[in-house]
Every structure is written in structure tokens, then in C-alpha cells.
Image 1: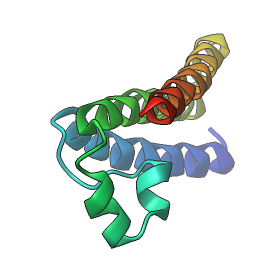
Image 2: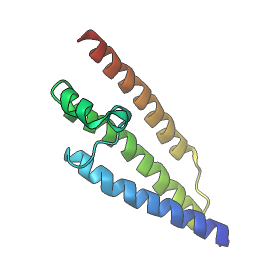
Image 3: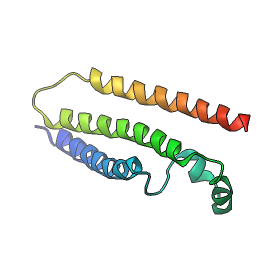
Image 4: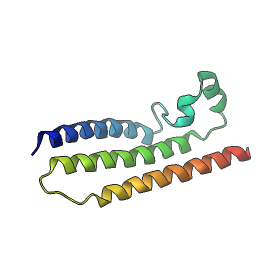
Length: 116
């Protein structure tokens, strides 16, 4: 096994572990909400918007998107470490699913907020 594969697999494994830990908290609706609307809002805006936003829906969106990303990192890390070169198409299916889910759910959130 090449040293580049070991380094790449190690870095991807660390990313997968860190994201997996964060996703374990978002599944239970705990921890910081690291979605784009919450990251860019000031503290006052967050407190004001907290009453209007469906927090469970935000956590669900974050869990699915980051859970899929965790699977991608994990799959690619296994690909880097294994001597058997498995196909990468399952990983790309997950990537397409996560991107499409993020786009569709963001549009749904925007339409729902626009209607209020």
C-alpha cells in the first residue's frame, strides 16, 4: 500500500469520525445547529427567529445531509485502505442523493418561509 493512500485514508477516516459524532448529536436534536441560516445569523436574530423556525426540520435536514457526507468519507477511506479496489459508483450515488436532497429541502424551507 502506498503512503499517499494511507495518509488520504487516515484524513478521510478522521473526517468521517468527527462528522459521525456530530450526526449522532443532530439525530437527537442536540448540539449546535450548523446549517447556513444559523451560521450567518447574529445572536439576536437567532433568538428572534427561534420561535418561527421548525428546529426539528432543521436538525433532520442537517442529519441527512451530513450523514450522507459521513458515508461518503467512510466509503472513500475504505477504498483508500483496501487492496481490493471496489467500485466507486455507490459513493457517487450517495453524493448525488445528498446534493439533490439539500437542494430540494432548501427550496422547501425557502417556500415555506416565504409563505409566512
